[in-house]
Length: 145
Image (cartoon, rainbow, N blue to C red):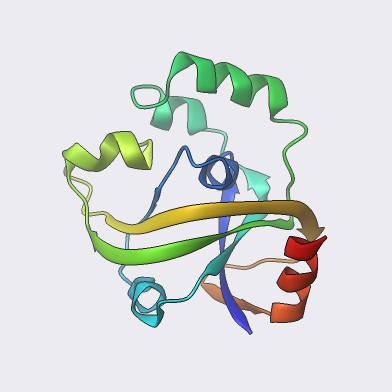
């Protein structure tokens, strides 16, 4: 089984595209993912974050904002979309905001540093909060296909 975390769109797609190499959380429960030294799967939740525009406006380029607006109805929801390699989890500060694509100052946020996003064709999958488990065969088949 391979570990998986679920993220609202557009944040999940931004990770898959390599635009967002830091996933933020208000807790440190994802630290175990970095310690395991294995790739994880990113799940795009059914939900679209209606405040993405406000949260990211200072940190995302206008080109990427325009791409998000143009493509948002085509980006998958309720699906596994990529794998990434988590390298560490640490407390964030404002200097990390441009990589997290949100304000990291004074919010007591933790950041999971993600590297080497590898996209594959979306696989419909029911997600939930926390760390999920996905059979490795599902991902191996998608990556090979």
